[in-house]
Length: 347
Image 1 (cartoon, helix red, strand yellow):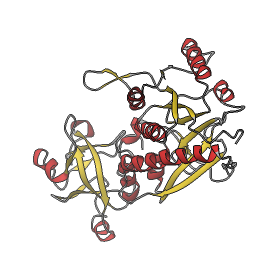
Image 2 (cartoon, rainbow, N blue to C red):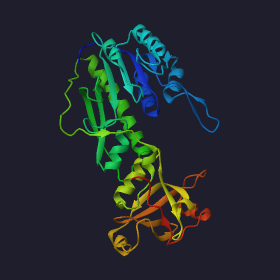
Image 3 (cartoon, rainbow, N blue to C red):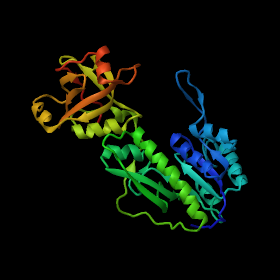
Image 4 (cartoon, one colour):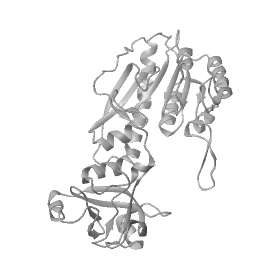
């Protein structure tokens, strides 16, 4: 690290927005650090009334009485230069020892990184993967989608690149066979919150040893697009099941149920929230059916043929309805063997 600070509670600027970041903010406050400034995204319209809603981090910061800045951008030469300049003054005046960043949502320009150098600890990022695997916006989603057996958290000292900074701490966590992004997110968030507190403890003792990221094994977790949620039944059951898990809670996976003699436009869209892969025996028995065909329906699941294997649908949702276990779903929306799901959109 570039600086060693006295062993005392640190003056921390915290930059983050969603629940993932809120947990880290709460843990830093609980550890006794002085939160001297919180940067978070501007309030956004949400809910049925589309009223402005504060971020999870802002709500937590308000409980602590911490100063809050919500710039639309941090670029001093950009469209919201006035916002950025106000944030610059707030950051400079805060007199912080370190900036902790977790899922903030804005890129930190070089001037922010430079401000936190010298006798400060820099900008430390809580990243939800074992770098250099899954740099980028959606590391938890992409790890599940790819079938990784484990992931983790890296505490990284930020530089101008995309998640390319030196690693300070890293710890792995197993990905369970039934983990969705929602479930794994909570595990990773708890781990990251504990790790950043530990990183600051080690930093004050001069015991953090930055390590360059390996040049091999770099992958990018590109932002999740809503269009990715459409299931292509030509794919294999294992990959489709991973996608269902990876896209829960956002954007969810979608398909269109059609009668065997209809076209997709005449069907009804359905979200699939939970599924499992059936045994090889069931797959062999259903191999003669076209992908997307429903081959069995019961209270324990709706079995659908894929390009390789059979996927059992366990939790579904109609437009405007609630997520329901398959037995409850079928009471209001009958499905029968022989019906088909449309192939998908652009997968």
